[in-house]
Length: 215
Length: 182
Picture: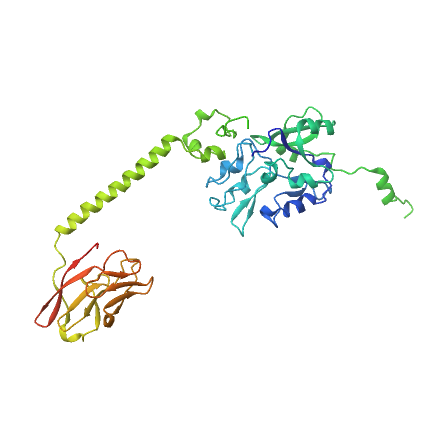
């Protein structure tokens, strides 16, 4: 069976609470027991506790597969980029370096690149991926576009990313605030000072740090 | 599924149509169904070329054996004196010099035989058991008849290649090598 065409991941970084449930669930999967295929990354550790779950985006033109000299990374007909084929992978780390999203990781003990394959064993049978099924805040949502649009009226899914000169379309969708955004420019955002990272909870701040002029 | 298996889902980075892509991209597709797909033409080509190479190899072997048959052997070479070996004893020698070891055995007063020491199965050195009239290969329990070199038991497919001998004036000479298939 194949992964249904209308179902995919919807990642909403703003909803991620950093609970690591997705990482634990992924680690416990018996197809790669002890190793998590999902990374929980801090967006800007110094400024904010905000985390974001990183799953494979399943690009239409997978850079990892393009750079693979051993022809080890394959994509199934339903658009899922699979973990490197074990007999072919030469653990050269090309894919690890090339992936713009930083998804593939090298298992140096197994000499094999392993990455998120959207829980292919589950999703191809109509089940949700482990991470999406345990995410308490549904920062990782698995379903159809209609479902997510009904659930999150203030957000819109985007799947076009710009990395320098490289435009990437992905199978996995990223939820962004509704507005005139149709392309996420990653390189530009590095130089962009965003306000969204700053915690401006005045009540909390005033309770925690009493400004004492007499002190 | 609403599309045939072999439809390309991966878009090349330059965005051009599949027919405008370089040939290596067709040979090393990213899509799994295309990677596993073997066209009838490719299959026939593979079968044809493989069969042709086997046939060529067989003919090459035939031609080589014809040439080898015509060529002169290494000539006579003294390998031992008759007194050197008691009945039941063996001696290793090289014939011609630098060859793999061969084995001379004295089976009777006037009865000398010589064979390759390498078992015809996987080239292990065989151990002489002249008292029993046998040679034994311990690797896979192969047995050869000492008098003829023929296989008695075990996996060896052919008799041991025999070295033809000649005894003149108390000296045993090797005069040629006889390879046998049965």
